[in-house]
Length: 424
Ligand code: AMP
Ligand code: GLY
Image (cartoon, rainbow, N blue to C red; front, side):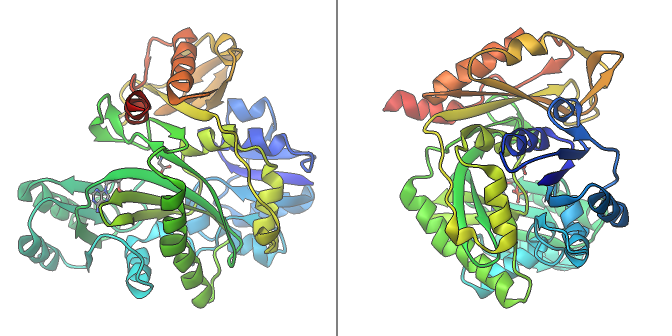
């Protein structure tokens, strides 16, 4: 079967790596892809926002499956337009993608289906939002509704920060003028990934991300500076609890609304004293969480994704290596602010040849036979190991083989899990 993958980040390089390894995959196209996917698939210059062009491409190349990496095309309804054209697409339609696109939508489902989450209020007016703040006090969490690339959330430890966050949202900085204000939850965070065909749920694996730019979880929020899988805090019992109390009721909710969710549900959880609570859903694989998941997946990815599209997820299973996978994100200086572009990166081949190491490209570009930085998050140096410590040591040994003076990364990815390993 010919497959078209949409996207250009490290997540898509990892997905292309796993899709391309499947015996079911004949030709693999990536739109637009990056220099990493270019080595294992055919990059195509196709604008995912032009749904008619995507449909025409699928017809011309006899595409049997479209896999959508990022959320934006899903929120824009690409899966609906592909379905209308009779083309299989892994990823939810526009309605179901509101789980990520609208925090208010998700919160309302949680309320209706008694899904554990932070208490909240949803506001369209600045004055009402401010009076809710006054009534509840800090610490408190303020979120812009709509897609804000992970940057529309303020965890306010004091009232001045909380008020400033509300003012910023109602100034229109994030596009819409709607916000969700919620209770501050205390606990360790973990990501839980589940496939669904709209009816059945298949738990994949867990991971932990590192959202802050600086070592010790300091500095501004980012798209993610590194990840590992599994997340040791997510015991099998907690995975079951999250599946039964959070994910399955969500799948039921979308089914009840007449818009079954097909794709991956990425649940961001906080493990509180009262059990796992939902912080957010994403309607896609995490980036860089996907990279560590793909490094551990033993089963055929195409089989799993097709079972979602075909409604046969109850007939497949997903097995995982016991190994830990850990990914370090290398960024261009300036990220998450204005990142320095065009700087040359050397030594990638030597680093990628190291045992247990894969390097996934994200914001890179090929220029005159060189690989240069072309975005904020640029490379995902990913390694497997028997322990988190081993995976981390391998990943950083590979990072240190890469010659890129204008790049940087966090040096403490995995610290929480390694502290746990040291205790055991
Ligand atoms: P979100 O975009 O909703 O995932 O939020 C980004 C980050 O803000 C999360 O990864 C958490 O670290 C933090 N956060 C969000 N909601 C809460 C909450 N209710 N309590 C504590 N921290 C939160
Ligand atoms: N790494 C966080 C995300 O993909 O949303």
